Length: 249
Image (tube, rainbow, N blue to C red; front, top):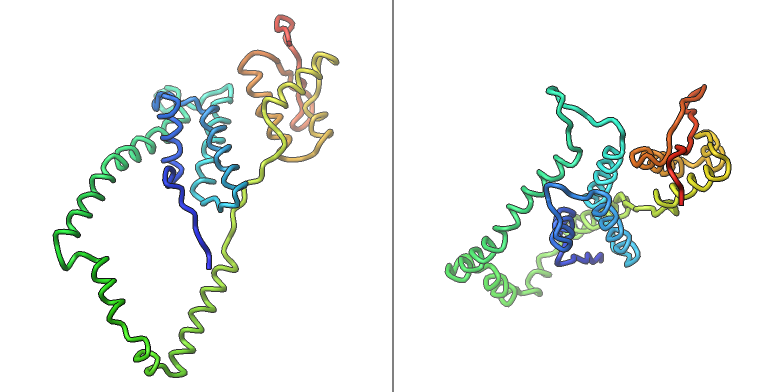
């Protein structure tokens, strides 16, 4: 038998995001995406350390947050038909506001449901279930069993077993890379050599995730004007240099 642990505070990813926003008194219309992404991923990793299966909707929202963060690091913003800049957080904010409105009425609806069940005798499901359980005659039911019924039950049990055995399991892998560490690595190399090629980073460790973290670090440093790049020859080749006016600590 499988037991599911349900955390009372966070029944879904948007519930968790609202908790972070209210805890840190953040502006929901101007969410610091880097901070809230780190908090969200830390919570997901804590679930894994406790051997709690992470629901697919948490994984989807984590991927969405990282996609928004990457878009905000790009030097060229996305524009609409009128030439106005599109905020990558706009859709997330809209979903959060909708969830917040629904959540505000849940407790009131639950109380109304509870009051209604206590008021109407036919609607008091809990009492009816207890009454039926007390009147059930197990021995009488056993007398009506035959081979066909037993086989049908066996078939249902085996089908449920196969579904559970083949159920897709989602696992979040925590890689030993961070954007902050890769920024430090690149700046330290620039301090020594003055410039470095992006192809050299790929050759050092040809791992897809490692390359992505380095690319995001480069985008962030470009935005902060800590480095500059020169296009080179060949596919995916460019040089990274440190501007003379930027001092690297």
